[in-house]
Length: 408
Figure 1 (cartoon, rainbow, N blue to C red):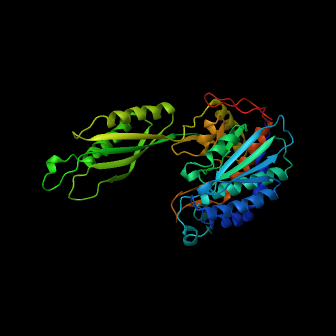
Figure 2 (figure 1 turned 45 degrees about the horizontal axis):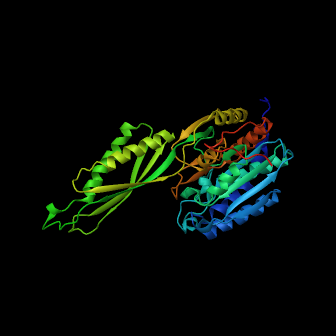
Figure 3 (figure 1 turned 180 degrees about the horizontal axis):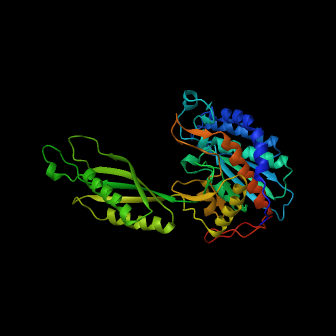
């Protein structure tokens, strides 16, 4: 590995663009773009398309149906046959309801900026554009391809953009995801996978005053099962179970004949997710209230994103550039999921949480960005791309049963 580093020079360049970055960030934050708010997501994609075409990218918009368009920008380098192929991924959708941008518009207070989606993750999108800008202004072209994907459905698990991300991941050598971080020296090298379950219980209705003994309460049975599910935390360390969205028969004078809940299960390994599935099935088939029955429906979600040897090699390259910025890089495992899970499932070695620094995500009036991190973390991203371009292309880990796409 070359001892040369690039991020300090990019930091200086990006600091000169801080005001312009904030102006463009304000434009995006002040547009409502909650998942499914197609009008706002389309407006944001139009801005991004214009800005990226101004950098020399070819830009296409892909129909995401009810989620609005997804944007793919492509930049071709000077080494089409032997250079690295990069895939940068971010999202423009937020978790906020219509009217949130009007209620809490973009504002700055000292070194902090506030607004819906300011850190999750519109600032990461802006940061990526300017990292690419300073790379190009330094006449960097020693790569094969750089793809930028900005989707509009990540907060819902990327249901419509997943095929697009999968296809592009198969054509790349390195994945870089622009989710935010809570501290300048932290990136992500692993994330839990997540499955979703629907647990339905059926009992027997009866008049709750006249003949309660004839009833079999689905609610009581569901309560027993929820407590048993909570006890699984002690039996399966590192696996988490979150029970939510409880509902049941509603008449107060009738013993409830049905009840249900949803369960989110997360684990760092596929083995953990499968062990959770077996444990839940045992709970479902063991009634506490005689005469009740239960049914469990599993929906597989994001697979775990694990720190493979290829991922750890990427961490070491990032660590070199971080040290040049005075940062002692820490690569963490996180419980939340992101599009990095999907890229890794496609076989693409990926680093995540490369975006700016902030916090209070999904809290409308408190979500914030640390403004100086736009330049600092943008420099880390630019330096990382430049440094990785010096590395010889190496084999990526293919998804189980599949091979990676050959170069055209």
